[in-house]
Image (cartoon, rainbow, N blue to C red; front, side, top):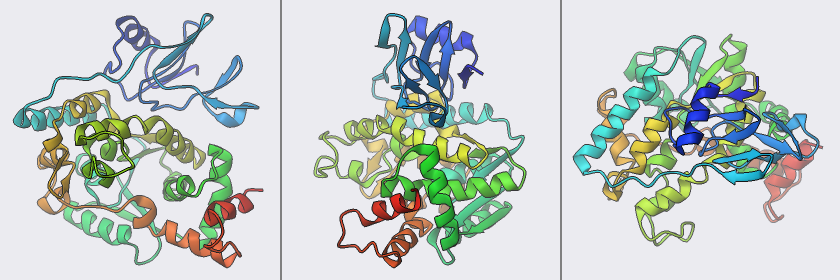
Length: 355
């Protein structure tokens, strides 16, 4: 297969019109001799001089092909960028998000599908819409396992709990490093829960895993966005500008996540990253992203269409913390002699496991 995500005709039309959000969940590959990747980089693509591949392990010196670009005989050029739509009125913005979600959900085939479920807003939204099995991973007594059990009860859904062990982490780290080419602690901590839940889903006979990826970036889910402009991690002086900054980090994050899930044997599905949802999110005013202590305001209000109040308003922890994977990987590093006083001790430990 030379193109992932959509048919060649959709890509041709998008490039000809300069339409960055043509109603897809992303694409990458070759069309009519052109190498192309969608504006959010939802499908990984790698190059090594003239050679290219979807899997970086197939190339000698792989480099990420930039999102929103096309390569022809004349060279590399940008074909599309994220649009800057006019601000929606608050009442219209929530309805636009709700309509976009309905459109995105209607494109999902549930055959062979399971859901990575933490009990938070994003995965609960998927669990409420799609009648498929739910899976959560974490160490015993972790926040995510407790929240997922409560969420599954509220939704009357089937939940499989994957209890992680230290042996699981030690076994999975080299696999993740080999698949992604990344050894830094944060990337590996985020990838580990994805890998372990995807591995179990594959073992249970499913070939696709639905994830809530993209919701935090699109809808103002990060603390650094909520604190703009005081937080030094963002440059913008507005919540809306800071949200756009984190949206632009998605290609790098999604590359890691997609490669990790594929390495475990299943294909990731990200309904919340459908073009319609992206477009609706880009038009939201700041007050529909963050209001007071509440983040992802518009998504929460839109989610009332499907979720009970407890789930629509629930906050969640980042997966590496909610699953306790970050804590336990740090523990393993210290037990192996990589003390916290050492520079980036967890990364050093990861590298030692991957040699």
